Amino acid sequence: MSQMIQRKRLALTGLIAAIALFVGFRVKARSDQTALNEYREMRGKYGLTLVVDSVPDAEMFGVEFFAGQREAPFYASSVVTQRNREIMAFPGGRSLPMTVRVMWRKEHHSFRKEGRIRYAGEVAGDYVVPVAARIPDPVFEELRARGGNLRLKFRLKPDGVLFGWDIERAPAEMRNYSKEEIRSRRLYFPSEYHMVGGDFLDTRY
Image 1 (spheres, rainbow, N blue to C red):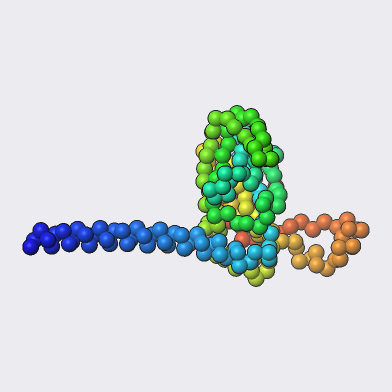
Image 2 (image 1 turned 90 degrees about the horizontal axis):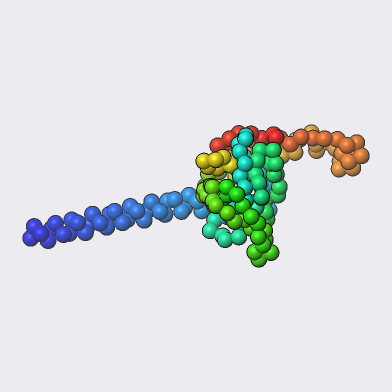
């Protein structure tokens, strides 16, 4: 009888552990999916911008960015430094990635595959960066309420990748002028940045 009770206890313990593991995976998946759903609900209401550079005095060669598990990179550069920082509309349209895999090489050579320039060589860095789940809910709430441009900022360093974000908007003063006035008078209105967060807080370069 005691052996039967012991077996039941072991079976119950295993079941509880399995349930806990399953719930843990569900909570993380729900957290990631919630962030992605927040974006999808507002898709088309704001833009996405990609910002890529490195820490001072660092050079990364044959750099490639991959969204999630995709095999084709959405961004590639022969070299990334602080001085050749790139700021562009997010490649591939307005699709907020759950994660971004960032790779670079010690040396590289380029080749063409399926119409894209790719890089090969000894890998010096290979990191997966969480994106959607790291951006707090208040950022999406701010975008929903006031609009703007969500910037995803990646800064490469020899031992990893820093990730940050902010909301870019034209200043309110700009609304007082028509497009024709701005063009004819060559008026300049620097962008304003809000809800800055992540591993670094730089906004203006």
